[in-house]
Amino acid sequence: MSEFQLVMPKMGESIAEATIIRWTKNEGDSIALDETVLEIATDKVDSEVPSPKAGTLVKRLFNEGDVVPVNAPIAIIQLAGAVATAPKAAAPVPQALAAPVKEIISQVEAAKAVLSSNTGARFYSPLVLNIAKAENISMQELENIQGSGSEGRVTKRDIMSYLENRSSQATPVAVPASASAPVQSAPTPPSKPAPSVSINGGDEIIEMDRMRKLIADHMVMSKQTSPHVTSFVEADVTNMVLWREKAKKVYEKREAEKITFTPMFIECVVKAIKDYPMINVAVDGHNIIKRKAINIGMAAALPSGNLIVPVIKNADMMNLVGLTKSVNDLANRARANKLAPDEISGGTFTVTNVGGFGNVMGTPIINQPQVAILATGSIKKKPAVLETPMGDVIAIRHMMFLSLSYDHRVVDGSLGGSFLRRIADYMEAWEPSREI
Image 1 (cartoon, rainbow, N blue to C red):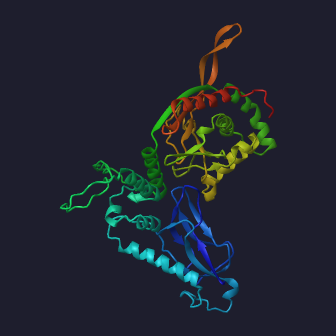
Image 2: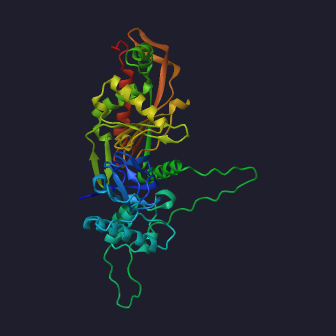
Image 3: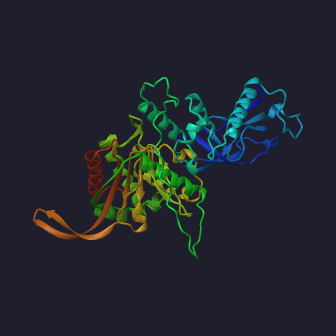
């Protein structure tokens, strides 16, 4: 077959669709191997989609701004060997397109027709419309579903949650023969209207950029999904501070890496997760998914002021040197906007350092679909009581607050508090004579 279907790549387990931002190739353009064809965006990152084959772009199946489900065909590329004698401008679709490709195009056009027939105020992705069609959800009913996506858009999560609630709430009702109105499922509770904001003279209106809108939607969705509880402990990290003072010059000379506290904190977190594996879970309806891999997300601030969370995959299989190299590499490429989609997906637990901004503690919001997130505060010198064989003494120690926000649906206070305390224990037990 001389045609190749370029599909929307899978951008992580929790991402079901992506938005086409810009096509870098027009129909009829030649495409080299691994050359970028279009740019896409999800609720986590912008990315480029390269072509795994060389050839000519003969058909773009979606337009800029369209939301496309993952693994759906987005373009037809005629392979290089088959178009050697073809005209340079090949914008029309060739007559010899194979039947499967024609079928794909007709399906896409049908989906677009459904979209264009929607007279409502909201945009619905093909994925949401297909689910609605399969579940016999009318457009009027779809309009009443509260969306958590950008600009109130209904996401796959929203419609699946609606279906679950509708099936659980629907009960057989005896309707008199004279009744004229059909029985309907319980309506979705109306969303609270946004408070009105008055604009005064001298006020400046700044429109959120696309990434800030996505972050805002993600944070609201997390608070609506998980009942948040936050616990706090104070840890004596004096041994960690003294060890790092000795190690940082050696690390920079031997490994060409600067060692920060972040990889040291992550090592302690990983040890605690092994002791309390039910922190390393996700919730799917009424099922708990216990993760085998320990993938640690590390929140990183971008120069724009926005936040991104690159992920250290299989952190439990790395030593401190490996963690240090991964932390530095991901942080540097995050600030340069050079992270790949796979590097910000698949996290099972997140660490955020509010101490980097001079804050002593924070109450972080869970990064869905995870169930817990740790915030590390700034390290301060404080007088503390130490127990010694000769009695209690007061000494100057390096102290730090740890904050753990967790999903109370599956993490109770006993588990959350014990896990947080275990992290602090590992930090306090850091061996100051540890080999560098």
